[in-house]
Length: 321
Ligand SMILES: [Fe+2]
Image (cartoon, protein in one colour):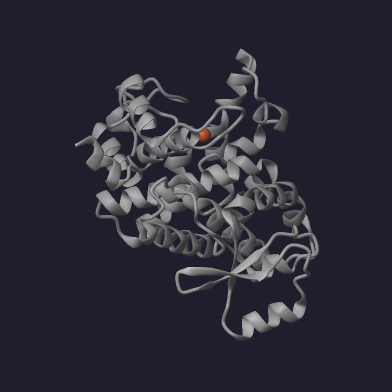
Protein backbone atom coordinates (compact mmCIF):
# COMPACT_ATOMS: atom_id res chain seq x y z
CA UNK A 1 0.00 0.00 0.00
CA UNK A 2 1.52 3.26 -0.96
CA UNK A 3 -1.05 5.77 0.15
CA UNK A 4 0.85 6.89 3.22
CA UNK A 5 1.20 10.62 3.64
CA UNK A 6 4.67 11.60 4.74
CA UNK A 7 5.28 13.83 7.77
CA UNK A 8 7.46 16.91 7.29
CA UNK A 9 8.50 18.84 10.37
CA UNK A 10 7.40 22.48 10.39
CA UNK A 11 11.02 23.63 10.83
CA UNK A 12 12.13 22.15 7.56
CA UNK A 13 9.26 23.80 5.69
CA UNK A 14 10.42 27.23 6.89
CA UNK A 15 13.49 27.13 4.67
CA UNK A 16 13.29 29.45 1.64
CA UNK A 17 14.43 26.67 -0.60
CA UNK A 18 11.74 24.21 0.37
CA UNK A 19 9.91 23.09 -2.78
CA UNK A 20 6.40 24.22 -3.57
CA UNK A 21 4.27 21.22 -2.66
CA UNK A 22 0.76 20.95 -1.29
CA UNK A 23 0.78 20.48 2.49
CA UNK A 24 -1.84 18.63 4.46
CA UNK A 25 -2.82 18.65 8.09
CA UNK A 26 -3.81 15.44 9.82
CA UNK A 27 -7.25 15.38 11.31
CA UNK A 28 -8.16 12.05 12.86
CA UNK A 29 -7.51 9.56 10.11
CA UNK A 30 -7.91 12.11 7.33
CA UNK A 31 -5.55 14.50 5.65
CA UNK A 32 -7.00 17.96 5.04
CA UNK A 33 -5.39 20.41 2.62
CA UNK A 34 -3.55 23.14 4.53
CA UNK A 35 -1.55 24.85 1.79
CA UNK A 36 -2.09 24.37 -1.93
CA UNK A 37 0.53 24.73 -4.66
CA UNK A 38 1.61 28.29 -5.29
CA UNK A 39 0.71 29.59 -1.86
CA UNK A 40 3.53 30.62 0.46
CA UNK A 41 4.09 29.04 3.80
CA UNK A 42 4.72 32.08 5.98
CA UNK A 43 6.37 32.54 9.36
CA UNK A 44 2.88 33.33 10.64
CA UNK A 45 1.60 29.93 9.49
CA UNK A 46 4.45 28.28 11.26
CA UNK A 47 3.83 30.18 14.48
CA UNK A 48 0.13 29.48 14.45
CA UNK A 49 0.68 25.79 13.91
CA UNK A 50 3.31 25.55 16.61
CA UNK A 51 1.03 27.40 19.03
CA UNK A 52 -1.63 24.82 18.49
CA UNK A 53 0.87 22.04 19.10
CA UNK A 54 1.22 20.90 15.49
CA UNK A 55 4.72 19.63 14.73
CA UNK A 56 4.24 18.03 11.35
CA UNK A 57 2.46 18.76 8.12
CA UNK A 58 2.08 16.02 5.54
CA UNK A 59 2.97 15.62 1.91
CA UNK A 60 1.02 13.35 -0.41
CA UNK A 61 3.00 10.31 -1.55
CA UNK A 62 2.65 11.54 -5.14
CA UNK A 63 4.94 14.47 -4.30
CA UNK A 64 7.50 12.56 -2.29
CA UNK A 65 9.79 12.45 -5.28
CA UNK A 66 10.07 16.26 -5.19
CA UNK A 67 10.88 16.22 -1.48
CA UNK A 68 13.48 13.51 -1.93
CA UNK A 69 15.15 15.39 -4.75
CA UNK A 70 15.24 18.50 -2.59
CA UNK A 71 16.87 16.60 0.27
CA UNK A 72 19.27 14.87 -2.05
CA UNK A 73 20.55 18.06 -3.60
CA UNK A 74 20.52 20.12 -0.42
CA UNK A 75 21.70 17.74 2.29
CA UNK A 76 25.38 18.43 1.73
CA UNK A 77 24.99 22.21 1.62
CA UNK A 78 22.70 22.30 4.65
CA UNK A 79 24.97 20.07 6.72
CA UNK A 80 28.06 22.05 5.85
CA UNK A 81 26.43 25.42 6.48
CA UNK A 82 27.83 27.09 9.56
CA UNK A 83 24.59 28.96 10.23
CA UNK A 84 22.66 25.80 10.91
CA UNK A 85 22.91 24.67 14.54
CA UNK A 86 23.75 21.10 15.48
CA UNK A 87 20.24 20.76 16.75
CA UNK A 88 18.84 21.77 13.38
CA UNK A 89 21.18 19.33 11.63
CA UNK A 90 20.05 16.57 13.96
CA UNK A 91 16.44 17.44 13.16
CA UNK A 92 17.17 17.29 9.49
CA UNK A 93 18.61 13.81 9.81
CA UNK A 94 15.62 12.78 11.85
CA UNK A 95 13.31 14.24 9.22
CA UNK A 96 15.03 12.25 6.52
CA UNK A 97 14.81 9.11 8.58
CA UNK A 98 11.10 9.62 9.14
CA UNK A 99 10.63 10.10 5.42
CA UNK A 100 12.35 6.88 4.62
CA UNK A 101 11.74 4.34 7.34
CA UNK A 102 8.31 3.62 5.96
CA UNK A 103 9.67 2.76 2.54
CA UNK A 104 11.03 -0.60 3.55
CA UNK A 105 7.70 -1.93 4.72
CA UNK A 106 5.48 -3.04 1.91
CA UNK A 107 2.88 -3.85 4.49
CA UNK A 108 2.39 -0.30 5.61
CA UNK A 109 -0.98 -0.97 7.18
CA UNK A 110 1.05 -2.25 10.08
CA UNK A 111 1.13 1.33 11.25
CA UNK A 112 2.10 0.37 14.79
CA UNK A 113 5.40 -0.94 13.48
CA UNK A 114 5.91 2.20 11.49
CA UNK A 115 5.18 4.44 14.44
CA UNK A 116 7.39 2.27 16.57
CA UNK A 117 10.27 2.41 14.15
CA UNK A 118 10.01 6.18 13.86
CA UNK A 119 10.19 6.45 17.63
CA UNK A 120 13.15 4.11 17.74
CA UNK A 121 14.98 6.13 15.14
CA UNK A 122 14.27 9.35 16.98
CA UNK A 123 15.61 7.97 20.25
CA UNK A 124 18.60 6.62 18.45
CA UNK A 125 19.45 9.93 16.80
CA UNK A 126 19.04 11.75 20.11
CA UNK A 127 21.39 9.24 21.69
CA UNK A 128 23.81 9.56 18.80
CA UNK A 129 24.00 13.32 19.36
CA UNK A 130 25.44 12.64 22.83
CA UNK A 131 28.61 11.51 21.07
CA UNK A 132 29.56 14.51 18.89
CA UNK A 133 32.15 12.49 16.99
CA UNK A 134 29.56 9.86 16.12
CA UNK A 135 27.07 12.53 15.06
CA UNK A 136 29.74 14.09 12.90
CA UNK A 137 30.47 10.74 11.33
CA UNK A 138 26.84 10.27 10.38
CA UNK A 139 26.74 13.77 8.93
CA UNK A 140 29.79 12.89 6.84
CA UNK A 141 27.99 9.87 5.45
CA UNK A 142 24.95 12.01 4.64
CA UNK A 143 26.92 14.69 2.85
CA UNK A 144 29.29 12.30 1.04
CA UNK A 145 26.62 10.08 -0.42
CA UNK A 146 22.98 10.66 0.29
CA UNK A 147 21.92 7.20 -0.87
CA UNK A 148 24.29 5.55 1.54
CA UNK A 149 22.77 7.61 4.33
CA UNK A 150 19.18 6.74 3.45
CA UNK A 151 20.14 3.10 3.04
CA UNK A 152 21.79 3.11 6.48
CA UNK A 153 18.63 4.47 8.07
CA UNK A 154 16.55 1.75 6.51
CA UNK A 155 18.95 -1.01 7.46
CA UNK A 156 19.00 0.29 11.03
CA UNK A 157 15.23 0.43 11.33
CA UNK A 158 14.88 -3.10 10.09
CA UNK A 159 17.68 -4.41 12.25
CA UNK A 160 16.23 -2.86 15.39
CA UNK A 161 12.85 -4.34 14.60
CA UNK A 162 14.39 -7.76 14.05
CA UNK A 163 16.26 -7.56 17.33
CA UNK A 164 13.20 -6.46 19.27
CA UNK A 165 11.04 -9.10 17.59
CA UNK A 166 13.32 -12.06 18.08
CA UNK A 167 15.80 -11.53 20.89
CA UNK A 168 15.86 -10.34 24.43
CA UNK A 169 18.07 -7.31 24.12
CA UNK A 170 18.71 -4.72 26.83
CA UNK A 171 18.07 -1.08 26.04
CA UNK A 172 21.81 -0.36 26.09
CA UNK A 173 22.57 -3.16 23.69
CA UNK A 174 19.81 -1.99 21.38
CA UNK A 175 21.37 1.48 21.27
CA UNK A 176 24.74 -0.06 20.46
CA UNK A 177 23.16 -2.12 17.70
CA UNK A 178 21.47 1.01 16.35
CA UNK A 179 24.63 3.14 16.44
CA UNK A 180 26.76 0.48 14.75
CA UNK A 181 24.15 -0.13 12.07
CA UNK A 182 23.61 3.57 11.37
CA UNK A 183 27.34 3.86 10.77
CA UNK A 184 27.91 0.44 9.20
CA UNK A 185 28.88 1.95 5.83
CA UNK A 186 30.81 4.87 7.29
CA UNK A 187 33.96 3.65 5.51
CA UNK A 188 32.29 4.55 2.22
CA UNK A 189 33.19 8.19 2.80
CA UNK A 190 36.70 7.12 1.78
CA UNK A 191 35.46 5.81 -1.57
CA UNK A 192 35.45 8.40 -4.39
CA UNK A 193 31.93 9.55 -5.27
CA UNK A 194 32.25 8.58 -8.92
CA UNK A 195 32.79 4.96 -7.92
CA UNK A 196 29.89 4.99 -5.46
CA UNK A 197 27.53 6.50 -8.01
CA UNK A 198 28.66 4.39 -10.94
CA UNK A 199 25.77 2.52 -12.52
CA UNK A 200 27.85 0.38 -14.84
CA UNK A 201 29.85 -2.64 -13.74
CA UNK A 202 32.81 -1.82 -11.52
CA UNK A 203 36.31 -2.82 -12.59
CA UNK A 204 38.23 -5.31 -10.43
CA UNK A 205 40.28 -2.48 -9.04
CA UNK A 206 37.15 -0.49 -8.14
CA UNK A 207 35.60 -3.54 -6.46
CA UNK A 208 38.76 -3.87 -4.36
CA UNK A 209 38.43 -0.22 -3.31
CA UNK A 210 34.76 -0.67 -2.35
CA UNK A 211 35.58 -3.76 -0.34
CA UNK A 212 37.90 -1.81 1.89
CA UNK A 213 35.00 0.11 3.49
CA UNK A 214 34.26 -2.21 6.47
CA UNK A 215 37.87 -2.18 7.66
CA UNK A 216 38.45 1.52 6.97
CA UNK A 217 35.21 2.48 8.71
CA UNK A 218 36.10 0.31 11.67
CA UNK A 219 39.61 1.76 12.01
CA UNK A 220 38.42 5.34 11.83
CA UNK A 221 35.48 4.97 14.20
CA UNK A 222 37.50 2.99 16.73
CA UNK A 223 40.00 5.78 16.88
CA UNK A 224 37.75 8.82 16.71
CA UNK A 225 34.51 7.90 18.51
CA UNK A 226 33.40 6.19 21.69
CA UNK A 227 31.45 3.47 19.92
CA UNK A 228 31.22 0.20 21.83
CA UNK A 229 32.68 -3.14 20.72
CA UNK A 230 29.18 -4.26 19.69
CA UNK A 231 28.78 -1.24 17.39
CA UNK A 232 32.29 -1.49 15.97
CA UNK A 233 31.85 -5.19 15.20
CA UNK A 234 28.80 -4.37 13.07
CA UNK A 235 30.83 -1.89 11.03
CA UNK A 236 33.67 -4.34 10.57
CA UNK A 237 31.76 -7.57 9.92
CA UNK A 238 28.54 -6.65 8.12
CA UNK A 239 29.84 -8.15 4.86
CA UNK A 240 30.97 -11.42 6.43
CA UNK A 241 28.80 -14.45 5.56
CA UNK A 242 28.30 -17.51 7.76
CA UNK A 243 29.62 -19.88 5.06
CA UNK A 244 32.91 -17.97 5.02
CA UNK A 245 32.29 -16.36 1.62
CA UNK A 246 32.15 -12.80 2.91
CA UNK A 247 34.80 -10.14 3.37
CA UNK A 248 37.13 -8.71 4.66
CA UNK A 249 38.20 -11.73 6.73
CA UNK A 250 36.06 -14.64 5.48
CA UNK A 251 34.87 -15.42 9.01
CA UNK A 252 32.39 -18.26 9.67
CA UNK A 253 29.13 -18.37 11.61
CA UNK A 254 30.48 -18.70 15.13
CA UNK A 255 33.00 -15.92 14.61
CA UNK A 256 30.51 -13.32 13.40
CA UNK A 257 28.60 -11.55 16.19
CA UNK A 258 24.82 -11.90 15.95
CA UNK A 259 24.22 -8.17 15.50
CA UNK A 260 26.68 -8.08 12.58
CA UNK A 261 24.91 -11.07 10.98
CA UNK A 262 21.57 -9.30 11.34
CA UNK A 263 23.05 -6.10 9.88
CA UNK A 264 24.30 -8.12 6.90
CA UNK A 265 20.84 -9.59 6.34
CA UNK A 266 19.11 -6.21 6.58
CA UNK A 267 21.75 -4.64 4.33
CA UNK A 268 21.06 -7.12 1.52
CA UNK A 269 17.30 -6.97 2.02
CA UNK A 270 17.17 -3.16 1.86
CA UNK A 271 19.50 -3.01 -1.13
CA UNK A 272 17.14 -5.27 -3.10
CA UNK A 273 13.93 -3.65 -1.81
CA UNK A 274 14.71 -0.19 -3.17
CA UNK A 275 14.96 1.08 -6.77
CA UNK A 276 18.59 1.86 -7.37
CA UNK A 277 20.98 2.40 -10.25
CA UNK A 278 18.46 1.56 -12.90
CA UNK A 279 17.53 -1.71 -11.20
CA UNK A 280 13.93 -2.05 -10.11
CA UNK A 281 13.09 -2.98 -6.54
CA UNK A 282 12.12 -6.62 -6.06
CA UNK A 283 8.91 -7.60 -4.22
CA UNK A 284 9.53 -8.87 -0.72
CA UNK A 285 8.71 -12.55 -1.40
CA UNK A 286 11.18 -12.51 -4.27
CA UNK A 287 13.90 -11.01 -2.08
CA UNK A 288 13.31 -13.68 0.55
CA UNK A 289 13.58 -16.29 -2.18
CA UNK A 290 16.88 -14.85 -3.40
CA UNK A 291 18.29 -14.75 0.13
CA UNK A 292 17.09 -18.22 1.06
CA UNK A 293 17.80 -20.05 -2.20
CA UNK A 294 20.22 -18.21 -4.47
CA UNK A 295 22.34 -17.07 -1.53
CA UNK A 296 21.75 -20.27 0.38
CA UNK A 297 24.30 -20.79 3.15
CA UNK A 298 25.15 -17.11 3.45
CA UNK A 299 22.75 -16.32 6.27
CA UNK A 300 21.38 -18.00 9.37
CA UNK A 301 17.99 -19.43 8.30
CA UNK A 302 16.31 -18.72 11.60
CA UNK A 303 17.21 -15.04 11.24
CA UNK A 304 15.76 -15.07 7.72
CA UNK A 305 12.49 -16.41 9.16
CA UNK A 306 12.42 -13.47 11.57
CA UNK A 307 12.97 -11.10 8.66
CA UNK A 308 10.15 -12.77 6.74
CA UNK A 309 7.75 -12.38 9.66
CA UNK A 310 8.44 -8.65 9.70
CA UNK A 311 8.44 -7.75 6.02
CA UNK A 312 5.83 -10.06 4.56
CA UNK A 313 2.24 -9.02 5.04
CA UNK A 314 -0.23 -11.22 6.83
CA UNK A 315 -2.72 -11.10 3.98
CA UNK A 316 -0.17 -12.46 1.60
CA UNK A 317 0.77 -15.20 4.01
CA UNK A 318 -2.87 -16.25 4.06
CA UNK A 319 -3.03 -16.32 0.29
CA UNK A 320 -0.10 -18.69 0.18
CA UNK A 321 -1.83 -20.99 2.68
FE1 LIG B 1 28.61 -2.10 3.48
